[in-house]
Image 1: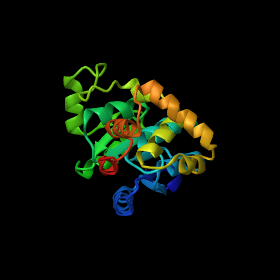
Image 2: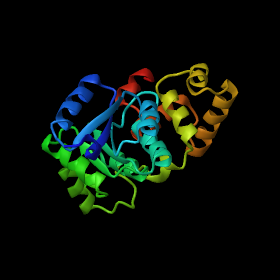
Image 3: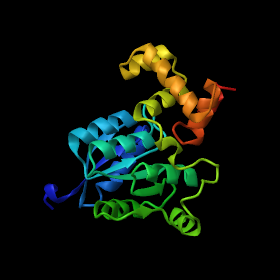
Image 4: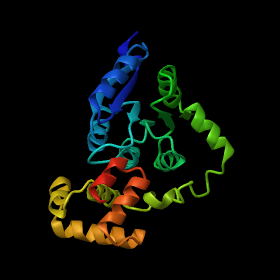
Length: 228
């Protein structure tokens, strides 16, 4: 098959062994070609801008920039790219938040491998695709209500992209100086973003911001170990 007719895919996952396995599986499907791999959300955004893949397979919990915010930035920068989430988390909060950001599919990593290529094909054709268990739950609830953790879907969406980036880095334990260096902004600007976050979310300490980021699916749950 002519490679130009293949569905081009970018893999975004912070675990090398996972990316290698996904790549091998996807490339066993003759109509799919993996054109790039990213280990952070920021790399995923940058590589999508550069490579313009048809489909981005995105994990949610990644360092530097989580999959939620990466999804939003990719949708803004490359609207034609279809984003398919592949995550270990199947909680409704994760599904609702990431679809609110623009993802068109969601597979849990425990899903049978046979569904992966099928999902890539479907989202590439403009359809949505969800793991069977998620699709069943979706039909059984009103997705316009609060999720089961009490977190409104739009709560994260009302933060600016920069605020989300700062929030994730705070939750990952970075000090203001480190955040400033990572984002290329001044320490004073970081402090302003931190103040805005606390006012918008009505949270008034770093531990609270970290717990919020965990609940929203921005960082891995084991980050809690740093704030006990």
